[in-house]
Structures are given as C-alpha cells and as structure tokens.
Length: 128
Length: 107
Image 1 (tube, rainbow over the protein chains, first blue to last red):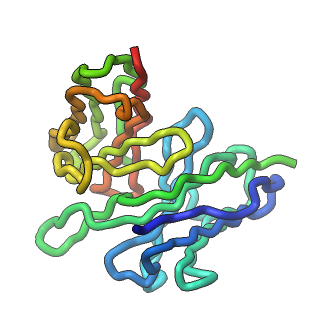
Image 2 (cartoon, rainbow over the protein chains, first blue to last red):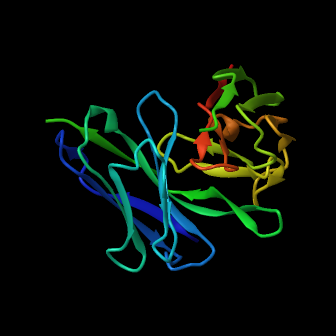
C-alpha cells in the first residue's frame, strides 16, 4: 500500500524559504509510471497545483509560482522536496504532496496525468 | 489557466438520497476530469478519472458523466460515510486546476 507523508517546519518567517519533504512508502520516486507533485490550499480557498517532478528530474511548475518554487528529488531515494522562497502570509496554506498517474492517452502517444494518490497535508504558517 | 467552476458550494442531504454535483470548465477539456472525496484530516481520495471511470474499490453508487466543458458527479443512495467534501480536477492542460469544492452534509 503506497502512502505519502509531508514533513517540515510548521512555521516559517516572512521573506524566508519554506522547505518541505514528502516521504513515499511502498513505492519509489524512481518509478517511470508516475510524477510526484505538490499542491496547496490556503484556508477557505481552493486547491492550487504547485508543480511536479519526474524520475529524470524533469519538472513542470505553475507559472503563478514558478519564480519562487523548486521541486527536487531526494534527499533519499523515496523522497521528494519542495522549496518556496521569499514567503509571505499569502503562502500560509495546507501543503499536500501527491502522486500523479496516467489518466488517459491522447492522440495515441500523449499521456495525461492526474493526482491519483495524496498525502494528508500539513499546515504551514508564515508568521514572524 | 483553465477555470473550474463547481456547484453547489454546499449541499444538505439525507441518507438514501441522490445528489448531483457539477463542474464546468472555462474551455474544452475533453474527458480529462477527475473527482475526489476529502474528509477532515484525511488525504483526498480519487473516485473517478476520465470523467466516468470509477477507481478500483469505489462503490458503484458513485458515477460521473460529461465531456467538453460540463461534468457531473452523482451519488445515489447516500451512505453515512459519503458526507464529505468533493472536488474536481482538470488535467487536460497545465497547470492542473481544481473546482472550489462542494461540502455535502447531513440534513
């Protein structure tokens, strides 16, 4: 049974860097069948997809956050990480890590990926 | 970005009822839409993918339909464990985007 668990400091000071790690149990982030992603949800607001990484290190980011976000594999073989720089109160949210699996095939070769498995999420507060 | 408009934002129903939740996309997403269930403190759970395909282990009282820009999630014969928040996700385009969610509670 595959599970994902977010971890990291729960409080980050404004202007500093938010760092989170997702630990995957029962699967490997080296899998060719999945992307590994981060999603967040500010209190009372909708979900926002942050970005994802493939086993090669290839990444896609949400353009709204791309200048401040880095997703990477590691530090260990079953982990991937998120960094958000120059945080403000607007970055206060529940942060989820998620796996993306194939949810369809287009035009014979293109794959479409959806968030098929999620962690429980962790509340990160930006506050001095 | 593709905007997903979900309605209603909240819904009250009774055990045994049938309910329908709608997601509308701001542009054609073909059938690349998933539905999720979320309970407080728990990981969101994928229910339906490609608009109408039930994930393994999901009860058959859940069903999805639609294509293009309009999609529905229907739950028949509501059970106590179904009272939760539901949201949709389009994955036709990056960035992936979500509906705002529908909270289903007991009447």
